[in-house]
Length: 298
Image 1 (cartoon, rainbow, N blue to C red):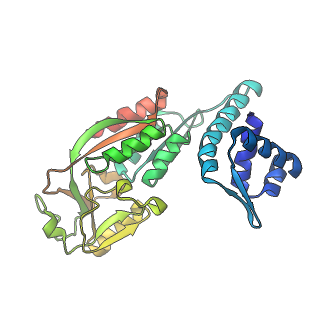
Image 2 (cartoon, rainbow, N blue to C red):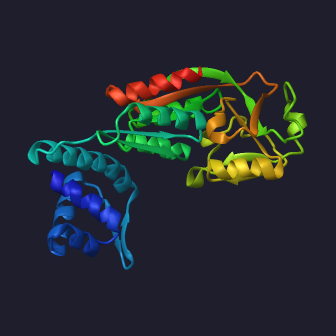
Image 3 (tube, one colour):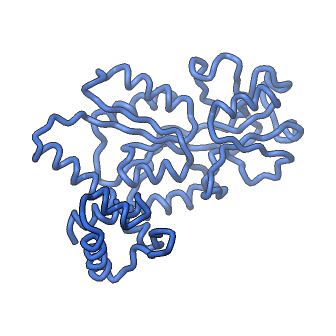
């Protein structure tokens, strides 16, 4: 197995066509097909299925490509730094569930480090994509939560992908809503009082398992659930429909605006906010600083 073969496999998966991949790689189609055939024979695994509509990655191929992409990216970095002798910008990327405090910490990080010297990226996305981004080296750190309900499933997935979870803080459950909501001025709220209002939830796409839900108590029989893809839409639904969501209670007025509030939920359930990273790989300087900034919200 060679790095070139890995590059070929990644290019085919992205192009979904052997001919298109050959054009992108500036190699002949027979040479590309031959290289992939040799790779599949060496692995005793079929990576691609050839169809009239193009190339489809097999289940085994998807697993193989998750590792191949990592190797290709690392190979590119080595070539860029040592063969081309270029000065590489220090990079830091974080993926997170939809947490305004995690975004605020990223903003503060960006303010501390000089633009131009560093290349920063932030991805506020679905739970499984947070895990995939850290697994595939797209992000160094991922911010998620675990609780009694999802912990076993999430830790199993992390273990299978050679990732680890580090706790930042444990917190109670709060109801996040607009200050115009009829219950917004209550000292504490119970689930019965919320029954007549729509529960808002972040859409998790194809991985729409309860274990991937960003909201705790996701298995309760809600009268009405409305799903949204982004935090801005979620906030609009709160103000327009008196909707609510269940969260850690950590809110950032500067980012969300001053028209939202959180009220403690009457429950003994808790959630643990933490971060995930690859095992046995220490955090970079920026990664360490980002984690320090997250700890301010404890």
